Image 1 (cartoon, rainbow, N blue to C red):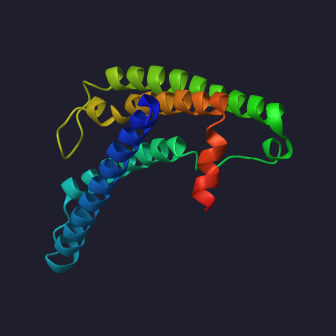
Image 2: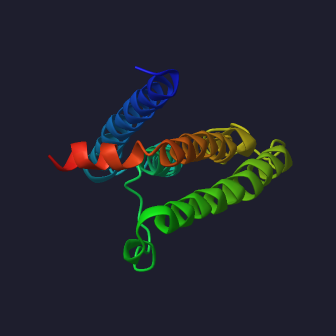
Image 3: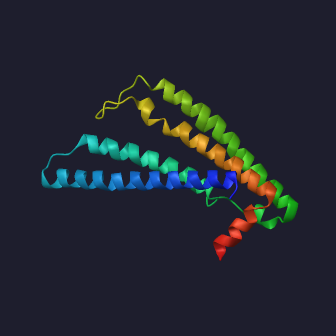
Length: 168
């Protein structure tokens, strides 16, 4: 197994495990919130905030995971009509656009918003909002790494083999 495949497999494992743990945490906190609100008539603001922030973290990390698996939504009506070299060039161009978006918006913008909000504190948890926003540049870095791996796979021609194996 090549180093790039090991890297992708390791990232996939870490991300899928993190999403599973966050989801399980959300189920526990959500159940607690329901029990406390309806049976004891005492709503918990801490659980509400925890659910909001963990949902955000899970959504962003899961989107990076899905992007890495190349199962993300796309408008394939143009790319699917192309074949051969033209299709590969189009797919690489799409990966480069996603890479640029991730660098500019997620990484650069994420670090900016993270630094800007480090002095703001969440209402119930009392942690800096910048800590909550660390997931944005983290997701950007993950998407950039996946985009590079996807481009390498496309250039090597190994991406098509991956899809064929998945269909069997």
